[in-house]
Image (cartoon, rainbow, N blue to C red; front, top):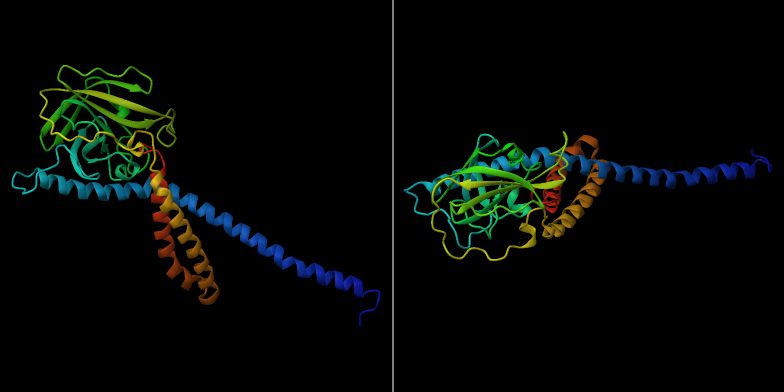
Length: 303
């Protein structure tokens, strides 16, 4: 039996023991939150610099097959060469051995969403080969980084562009950064400008700090530009801007991740570790993929 003098000590010990589970529960919840956040960050890094490149390669393969079919003389559908072109439509093939560009498909539009599939054509500029300055943008670090090597281009290097109006060759004139003097329209009447982001040091492509522009002059004659070029483009399509419309989908995927995590814990408690992961892992992977894709669209379009 416990003596009278021992009862307070026993009661204190019992009270102390009773307070431990809530503390431990808070620690478990905090650790789970930290682990979940770390998982999201790690997965996003893997997606941005790896998995998104695989997604871009698949898009490029499909776009290439579609565009090559449109260029076939027997095709009943003509390729788009001007006017109001739907964003995401393939409009050109880009080649430059120096910049590592080999039959890269250029799509119409330059938002982060458009550039996930490859380089994009700024919609308020003419297509390559038409009079004026044609502007193409591409990512330097994510989604396959198709423009990561355009900084290797120097004066005299050739860039070949194929559109629905033919194949055009451009000779590089200069490389510049924001604030430098804008180039004048050359005598040929057509200028091609490639835009991406870059930095300095060995992390230049992973942590770009500024925009870079490569200007090239058409070698040959221009072709007629159809009427109806886009007058004003949204801010999201200007170089260095992200796509804020993705916030809605980011919130949706975060909610899906929360629900998926709760469901995984519930399954773990009822079924066990391996059974629950067999069911939950593919679902969580799909959710993380969708979330990472939308977050990537929030980043600057040329990153």
